[in-house]
Image 1 (tube, rainbow, N blue to C red):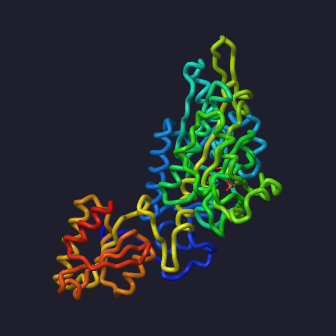
Image 2: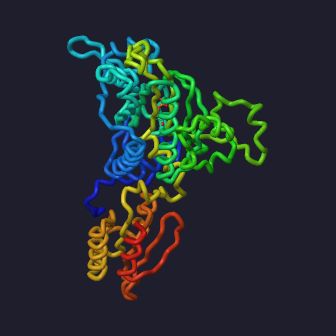
Length: 436
Ligand code: ATP
Ligand code: MG
């Protein structure tokens, strides 16, 4: 992509409405624009990141055996009357009427709808287990939308739902998701903290939240620092003791906090920190299947209400959370896995014939090697170009300038460390291709 042609409205000034780094940087780097309170347009650069995050979520869901479908954003109110949640949900639910005066709602979550889809189709325990997910926009009319995409009203969520014949099987599905979540967040360069959590309006009696540590996080966490080293590959979701194994390390939100248990953690390992909730798991048994009659014929011919769990990941919130975890005073520092482009190619003097040729050659070679490159060939001051590249935060920068070219070199800079290296054009290409 050539920067002169790209729709990238960068802001020099810090927008006054942005209180936290990620919101500020997403606005300044031309990733998002607010359309209405808590409702955002994703501009091309931001949308690329959103799609990368979404794809990692999708791959780990697929790898864990979940199947993707797509439910609509609008749902009929009747379904929510069946579960009793239509009244309970209160003002957070956006309610509307169609031209036939039928009551509808913009889905804040999908337990009822997926239960309806399941009960229409599945009749026997032989068809279990099933685990279905989608990645779809949700609407919650939050009292205080804030911090940009972190607490929006419209936001993108991955939500999945497991269906099992009994509690033991349902817990296996639950811990399979636990593993998948750890992997998902780690692939985005994050250190997820899984904590025991309250269940809220979704209901049920077992729940974990996954948090990214950040001073601006809205949740209060208490945990044993050993949990940061948790290796999900060592967890066996099918083991009957998996739940107890996790309890070895104290980790809870303030709602679930037990000061006496926390006091037993060695002092040097006790952490009290703020966290951004990026995902949550719920096991809620028959909370929806019983009232909505999602039943199957059991092995002995009996009628069994299926055991369910639901699992959410805040896909759009993650974009903000990743920035909170990875930025400096100059801008964003994208982890490779979610970076909108891998390389920012800066041409210091595009009007110079040699610079233009070298820049163009590098751009073509990188693109041919499958390296997403953002090529800054605008007529701007070097200072403005460096500042823009640091702000946008691509993992690698390649700087082409007249002085270097005289020696036959370009400068390769790693955004994360600031380490710079002078390399020949060939070596620069080889280096960047090799890193991929
Ligand atoms: P919160 O406590 O932050 O309000 P929640 O517990 O109500 O979130 P869940 O029902 O667990 O949310 O939804 C699953 C995930 O969706 C959350 O873990 C979070 O990452 C994301 N999410 C929830 N509400 C919002 C929001 N208003 N804006 C952006 N992401 C959200
Ligand atoms: Mg939650």
